[in-house]
Length: 237
Ligand code: 5GP
Image (cartoon, rainbow, N blue to C red; front, top):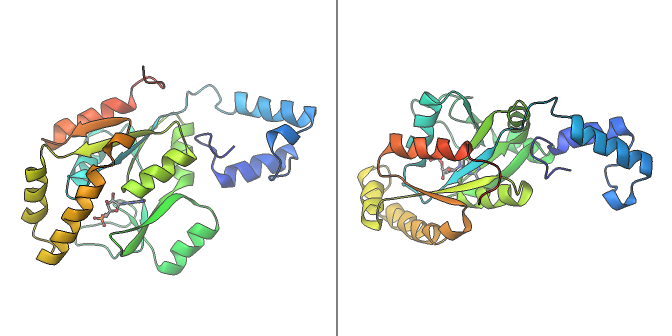
């Protein structure tokens, strides 16, 4: 049930309680009344609105994922951009609830325990980042297309949980350009830069796991390409 987009574990628990079905039941073990009630629920739950598409954008460090998602946030209000929870402190200019939900470790633990997160990961060996599932289910159910900008581990987890998600890999125009972007932003010291370049090399090797690739030569054009992918029909040719 939870691999149906829009049906997170919390909602599944509520629906199962309403239908009088134990959560641990497998479909093969259902009685005929339970089976038909569950089937009716699945057929009728959308209330006539086609569910939105879930698109996951990932890519190597410094490729410009943040700029592309900021461009989408500012110019494409029709896309629901997921706001992640993180244990890292805010940077100057970052707003709680807009860029991230900045939470303490114990709050993040609680979100994991209550199964509120679709996925979570420790990124760059430091802080935890996770995708709250209830707002995503609500947006998809209302017919909105949803975009997640998360790391590679997160993208893999989402595909495992929701196989209908579309994975988009953001690429730099070239390796040299990626090096230039990483060293040019001046926020990391040389040792950290070297570590991130090594990470980027490993991350680039994962591009074949993705459904689509978008080259980020120019932010606005890459953002448009990603948005266009959300409008594609459900099944790739
Ligand atoms: P930053 O701290 O620079 O905003 O983000 C660091 C990394 O965390 C980026 O690669 C970003 O894609 C990733 N990230 C942001 N939110 C999430 C999330 O909810 N889940 C996962 N797995 N990664 C995330």
